[in-house]
Image 1: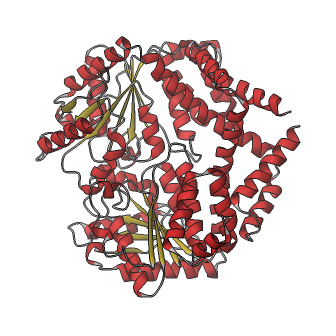
Image 2: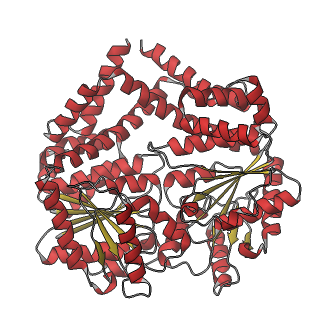
Image 3: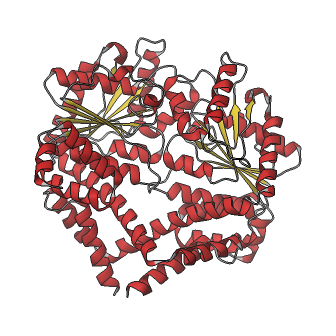
Length: 317
Length: 317
């Protein structure tokens, strides 16, 4: 990555930023070079995860939060890793309307992450994209993921502040998804609060919070109501994200959050690197003949894995 | 795993099967021993993945399929890895009603898989649970996952036949989830077909299928209508699952499907094993001090990963 390009990314030049994110999405040495060049300039941005079940309107909320921050003069980056988002999957369906009031504003950068083949590949590329936006001087980075699927939830919870979005009237199956994501919430939002049953949804969330064991200093997530499609309540959400940030600072928790994020990123990179090193030590025939042995039930998966690992160790020594 | 236990699992003794699945869920040497003992007896079962967006009623459909197969005299295993399923998340919400007509039937074994911390851990445990049920002589194994989240989709598509469930009137965000899962469908089901818009949903799916490039021999997924809650249309789904199985046999594709499943399982085991071997070569202080270097922006994640990998290679040599 040449000096000129680095400077252009740091200055927030949209084309340079887009090029850098494309490079980290492709992975490999190109991605490593981009991160090596930009990582020293990271650590300034506030990183906010927004997650929730499908149908809660979290993409609209992300959009409204971005507009609110823009009016305050903040520069906002959005990374959408949500297949249900208008920035990604929704865009395929032609639902680009909601993006229109953001696009064209140089203070906003929106990037959707494509689903990638390998486990952890998407999460890793998302982390790297956040680093690029951080180095590019964006004050706030909103990372939107759908709250279903373990890796998607993991991405959101590695933010500094995690906003979990709910809505009334989602039906039993969707309600059940929530169980897994409520515990990672720093701020709870009941969106579509003009619908019937909003009060009951708020009450259910409050009850859920009351069931949690209390510790003296711990943060209690507020339960906020919004009608994101009309921009109602977004100011409150922004206030509480700010309060949570102040809490993290007062309790000296920001560094710990960052370490957890780095550790989780490191694990993903290690897994991928270990795998690609292992495969580079093997020829395809060897792998095929071992899978043959599974097909004939001569060896099970753990026996095959052991044999491959031993072979790789021998070839390294 | 002692001989008596192996025999009890093979005879389909529910307590022995449950114990074996618990062992594979815990992972480690105990899991390896269970799989080593049982894997030689696998390969008979028909493995069917059922996936779909939340709210499509796929759990009800799985339930009805199980009942249908039971009436034919088949023994049925259900592995639910879906947080929205009544067998897992839904059960937490007290929605156990739908299970009642299956429980108590010794020809049915239902197991929900708990979400596990590590990437790939759940998928790996699910594969192993399928092996246990296969060795226990279940004729059909239904693997239910929510069609959101990459690893969840990966689990479903590794079945011999993948049923993708849709429903009318799910709203835009849910519709968008579908885009990612339609392409893995061998059988498409529009459930809740008594609702308004069922015809439009069928038409949309047919249109989507028509957009696909055609190859001469390739399987064209049927689009079937069901009202699973009343058991309507389940027979059709069973018929088409059977037709797909016959197609796989006629085209000699069963072995290829199995190899793909084994390969995917092997990759997950290798990733986990490689990681745990690497960590066993390192002391925690070393890891901590490297994360410190990330926190101070002296080293980025790829540089830290490289250093750890070199250190591990040195300590092996």
